[in-house]
Image (tube, rainbow, N blue to C red; front, side):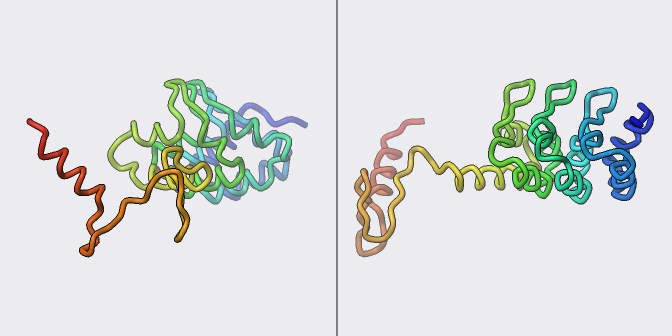
Length: 188
């Protein structure tokens, strides 16, 4: 037996309000793949609602039980406005939800773009004040995975492609001296 449209709507609302027991009851009655496919009239999934409202317990429950074959499509699903669930977590500064999504789907979750063409990090920056925590977490995660293309990493005693600036007795770097010198030449 398939759920009625009202039952599907109730599931999405349960995720919105953080009602873990109702989400579990729906999935026990039907199955987790149907839970993953439920959408409201604006195309929002239970993941969108859990992420947008910071209900990481509901989010983790869904992510843990959705069949692995359905998980990539669920993580990539966009609502009618063109936003994936991760963007809702970002817009509302729910770092734990972003982390749970990334744990389930990897860095690809952060690379998804919305209708405006922004990925999760760009969305955090665009959203502005109050999103520093989530933007910082995303930036740190991406750096940990991909590194910085412009940086040559060196460990103690190694020499990379670029010369390491030397330091004088006071700990000043030649690089700092160069920057100060160039700044003095600027006219405002």
